[in-house]
Image (cartoon, rainbow, N blue to C red; front, side):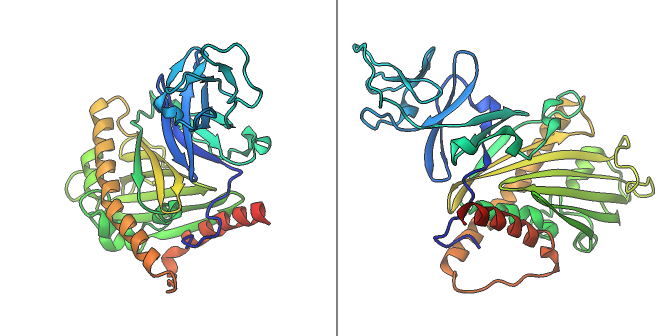
Length: 353
């Protein structure tokens, strides 16, 4: 359950450190995989990440400021560039060779700032297996980014996304209302991949939930064919495509039709500590892309849905921490969750062998 003292995450992998808009003209501090990190942009707009500790008097660099040369410590003014090298010491011309701090490889793509927390010599762009091009298409997929800090292990959040049979119970007022039995009895098509697991759920001829009615304007008495497609990519990303069309329109054969309800959602889950994580999420409006109000309402509806998850996830974390010696039971609805766990465990074993 990833609650022991053993390694709970791979180090040699790309993790989301921030949304691109978060890294601006002021230091951004984050605790990532138990390490204190500070992010900033240089004069050319390039994002960099350093350990949050000045090599002079161990002052957190987050208390400093971004200047033209890099990040300047707020205590005595030492300045570090994006590689971690000290490039300026006030009142001193000679800079000691060991005046430097650790830097972390950064990769910025599709409005996401990725960080490599392991061996920097192993970092390469081809090891980022997540692709979410819809983030770059604001015209057809407008969206609002968000981030939560959650008091649970990062894989509990992945578990939550791999077994959606909780939706009609926790989210009755948003995405889980309507036809409860039709949702629990959804057909599942699960495929293990080289980088995780992919699945698609179909719920056909069911009553649409409140969020779908509000978003797409389904009228009373309308039945829909609803799908939920998810892919978990190790170590900590989930890509989602969800929607519904009126029953009889052939959704299984063509989900790209106009009308109905249609959104994509990116989930980035980065460990903060063994029992806390950052949850980066953004829902993309594919059903009314020209309607700014619809994009805002979609974000608000999804936010309410995720708020409903928080109490359960944090309570689950607390309960698991107190009952480590008691096994848990798998049921048929864990058909995607179990391979997701296998995928992250394989990655950890390969790295620690």
